[in-house]
Image (cartoon, rainbow, N blue to C red):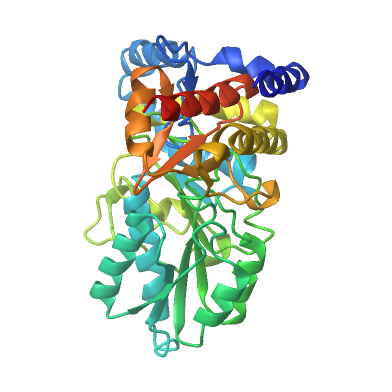
Length: 410
């Protein structure tokens, strides 16, 4: 397979983003890290950034830092994510809570509107049966709380949700549609623009899960009319384990939608300490408790990198990485009975490639012990998560060849 490695070396030599590779922390004992779609690598300066924070912002400025910077950090950081990754104008994105909590907040806010006096006929939430468990679990819980009914979509396991699936599911009873932009299993990329337009034609609201697309797939939430979106920051935004998520709420819905967890940080006057809750009229309403300031530090360095590379440049490299991975799978793994479980067309694929084989659970355990780190997905899938700024083409091919070697040794 020297030809594959030669191709990878040539692509790395021509890669306009190759200088970013050196910005990431070393990985002792790791030959190939292929799980950037699950947990992004830390930057070299992440430890220094945290140490500076402890010494200066927290240790020296102490509580004064709330007035000087921390109070505005959730919206300031949200604006950076919106501009660099989402195609969102300022004032519509906020960093707060976990993905699960933000999904709950936005679903409840959307359904509260749907249950108003002019929307009594809208009684259904539309969601895909194979969506990530959190999305499904939250939707089921919200449906139970509100008396809504869930209409399940069955999508192709490789190609994901398509426009025709939505056309068959959305009716005058639909209140909210909840979908993932990139399928967490296959990497299939949904038509955000077209599907959002379909949902709006039916008079419903659209909520997108961006966990597997934020930071690797260009999008235009404002231009495409997206109502609501949630995404995590520990994958392609490299915020670290447990890093807070972000929520996007289109400006047209500010002051109209009202989230259910009424905390002091979402009040119109945070320090009024008044007798009753009055929500802020801006995106700040979707904050509840004290922002997780420490958890917002690591992603800031990655946003610097994304702003420099541009999301279009990152997407271009993502395509060459995943195309090369598919080629390597065809040449090195298909003869061993490995199935491609992702779309072949890079335009229909996100930042990871999924492959399947009955022995992949055992293969993954062997690979981890040898310093090659993909992730296993039940029942028999391996995801090759190729984060463009931290992954080289040689690393991608090395990982695929390691899967071949592990399979042949079982």
